[in-house]
Length: 147
Image 1: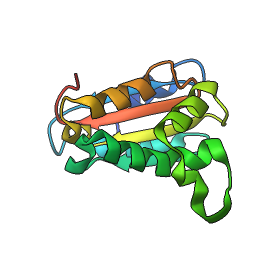
Image 2: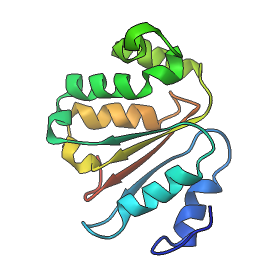
Image 3: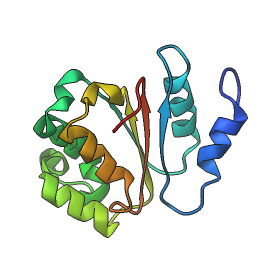
Image 4: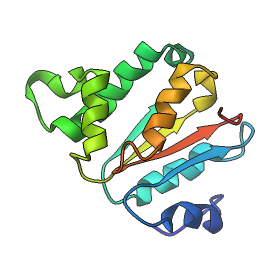
């Protein structure tokens, strides 16, 4: 997909030219400066499954965030299971599967990450961004720098 409109080529290249199956980054800018537009463009150009999490204030509670991540990412590691069982993965099972790389390369977009605050929920996103999930690329957008 060619870069068009407000998305700047150098911003796209900064992500897409990183080597390997794992990429991570945080886009920080004030409201209205095109963070979500950039993430949408990168999601459209990613070759593989893309999962999108738009953070809400309630996600600052780690149990809530982990439940939402399990629902978003569970099918990547568990495949098709009966009655939505993939979304029932607990945090330990989800992270273990992601750490083992039992899925094709995938992209997780975490938009509005500033709503997570500076507590344990940000640490969960940091863990996903680290090398502990070697085939999961994570891009986050925030109005404020994340701890």
